[in-house]
Amino acid sequence: MGLVRGGGDYVLAVKGNQEKLHAAIVEHFEQLHEDDFQNSACRRRQTKEKSHGRVEQRDYYQTPLPEKLRPFLKNWEKLTTLGQVISLTERDGKECSEVRYYISSLKPGVKRFSQAVRGHWGIENSLHWVLDVTFNEDQSRIRKDHRPDNFALLRRFAVTLIKQDTSPGSIKKKRKRAAWNNQALAKIARLTT
Image 1: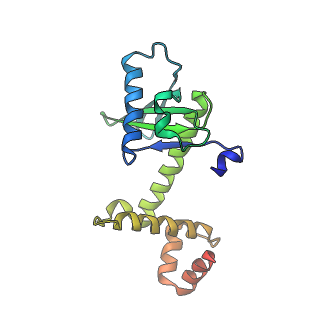
Image 2: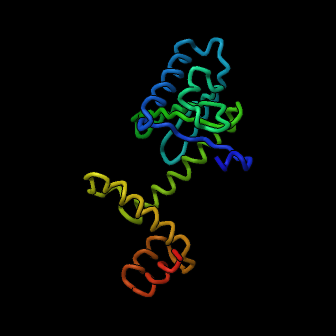
């Protein structure tokens, strides 16, 4: 992995599409919680934020990579830690929770882990907001086969191109301008070369 060889680190979300790995990490953290973290090198951090009419509490857990999980992760260079984030959000009297799992090349240090995860969420939320406002992505009715993924990729590509356009206006305005004016469209299209 070039990133690691260049001195960088990674924190990657592990989701259900990697079934065996995801299940093994879930089992690892469930066992830690059941044992109340007795005899573990788990590091913990909790944050609370109030903004935009909601209260969010996040519990971050980071552990050294256990030996029993090495077979699942042998292809990951410099992999040293696993992470779990439990997010509880309350808005308008309603609570929702989410649990996410991560693999990481970061050394044990839960504060740095939490900052990396938080930074990723900020970028992801920002992009999602742009896609929804600019392309009305949440209203998309595309559901069949690989079409949702293909159109999501095209939308992200379009946002990347539009952001490179230095003409005045918001992303939404630049998109409309390109739809109504072939010269504006050609200017954005030239950004791909």
